[in-house]
Image (cartoon, rainbow over all chains, first blue to last red):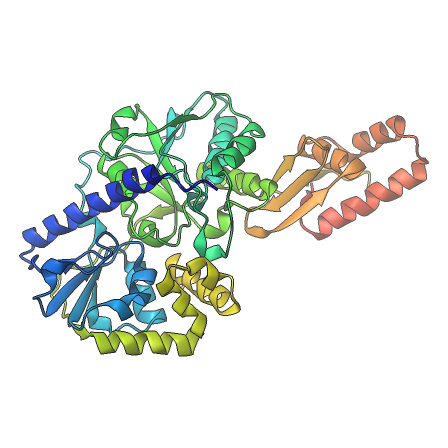
Length: 367
Length: 91
């Protein structure tokens, strides 16, 4: 048996999370928010020794928020207040998991990255490159990206460079239950061979978040159809927006907070997810291309949170315990699997399936 | 039926597979798929090219070794189903 290559964990995850950590700390400094009691549990998986002498802790939740909350039984006896990067994460925590409303604040994603100086108009007749940047993972529905670009090329009847920046991984979409993937790369390559491309996709590996933007050419468009349960932000999406590049994004999680006049959302019902049957992915991609050309896709104009004083409070460890117990009563005892790094096991139970239906509705802005 | 002209509805996407089957989906209903094969798939592909149904039917009668009445009846039933499912419309 081969152990997973640690490279993917070292090179990919910390680069996104590391960038976000830097950005959040910079945001705190600019806004005169205390930074000596901040904990990033998605990065610092063990409660930091340096915070032992603090009684109040500010917890910054990233994509692993569900698992982190159910791990909180192992946290020290202190008071906590929470920050997250997506209005949808906040909504899940408050409306689904009954978090005290004032204990969690959202950092507006527009305040973490620069506003584009000159957003480039989306001109479908001039697009010369469509790219994706991020992990090449079934969690990100790479098949849908390839089918979309294939159909786009057919629609415009000309060569368009298709580029995927990222490295392969075999992580399954854990909110869908238990899947074992031997080689996602082999599955995608096999799928790609059945699609028509006037210009075959290029896979460019091993570039950091600081390197891939230099490979973007004129008249580019980004597409990202991720329905990953941890998609609370999307660093490469923010980078593309910073460059003013038009984007086609799944209306999901952190993407729902994108505010870019030159970009569009794709409803999650229109996305062919990995593990769907092949025809389904291709037809959904064809449908998205048609909707894009017929101007039927929703523009990414999200509500901008108003600059107002937000009251917030700290909650003690016993409130978190009560919240977890209430979630077990409401959803089912199996939800405690999430605190044991076994989300896929929870997702394969009846209560897990029900929970993730509700989760999907909230995370996609449908409720 | 065969005097009428039909067209594929505008909200339809379809995919022709190498095994001869065609899979159809309505753009506003991504959860329902229709898979058609055999002569039905051939009729669909020709309708998608905006060909007239009487021309398509004539071609099938000429090329398939089956009684004309059977072919006419099959195509008629198929068209009725497509109309009922709102996959095609009468022009």
